[in-house]
Picture (cartoon, rainbow, N blue to C red):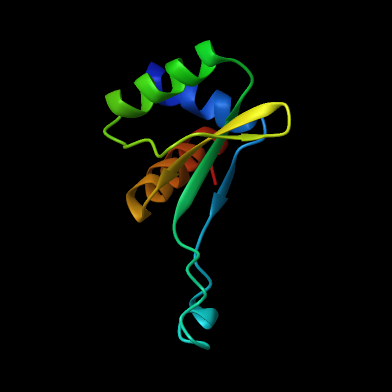
Length: 96
């Protein structure tokens, strides 16, 4: 694990989360269920946001459009690859 990945995990530890699609709901109804693969990183300042976006790019992940949530900004990272990367990084650091 490199320093960029460690720094992203630190930001993740500050209230980030991972969302995965619920396979049991994907085929239900009129196709309204559109939840997908997503990692959410929360930051307080514009400087932190710029750092996170730079770190994501250096790790080969594409940042989504950030949005405000309360006093913080959420930096979403969409896709199964992003979830797999964070799962692996967490597994390495936690030892699960």
